[in-house]
Image (tube, rainbow, N blue to C red; front, top):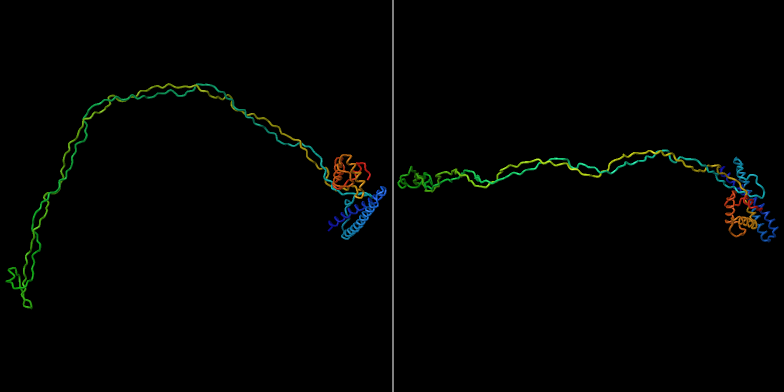
Length: 377
């Protein structure tokens, strides 16, 4: 709540100051207009402007009184005196501007590279020379003296004596003989014994009166042919005489021998690269490197400042034309002199102020610029 009251008081204070300046400037404008024999229309327009400014000033005074009353009721202390221009004068206008922080260049020496050393390698040195080198050492070798051969005839065994076993098959013969076809037996037959021959063994009478005789029946034979073994199979050993053959044979008449042959050493002349001096290293000290750098050092902090500026009511057409001519004579104003305080006029005034180390603004003309141009507005 207190911060809002402070902001309100600051806004109304700036409005009161601007309004007061406008009223005083309006009076001066009226006198200048009458002295210049201005037309009645221009005077009426100026008077209407003054009336509007006075009405605005009255409204702002009312708001300021109301804000001060609210601050007093809330126990908030009065506004800081920096919200008002110091020692304001009647007929003057002020603008509260932000003065940026001021810096100055400061040079200092900084270490960019620490001291060290560089190692330089000096390469080895070689030279090319010719020298005789042993290609092959002396040695000996054995030479074979081949054998001497001759031809002789001799009887050679082709197949040695041997025996063979011959198998003699078994011998058989066919014989005839009788064999029992049906062996002897007894049987009961009807009829008396006189009828049944002498082979009757006994007889009997049945209940029916029939006579039954027990007759002896002789065996019956048959003649068959039979193959019988006369001599079993056997083996017989037979001698096979050796076989010989007369052949021509190559034989060694003088056996193979060896002899030792000496081989002399072999040399050759070659080009070789020989080391004359080995590689070495050289250590070179590298001093530390420094560099001068410039940095900006803050001289003063950012601050707010009140500046006297050219009042709006003082910017009559004749005054603005005088300002434009003065800036044009200095080479800053390039447009036509029309008495209108526009962007080109403000830009020219700002460039002139900066080139002459004067306070400068983008939307107002500081009074120092007017004084530097030897103008009385």
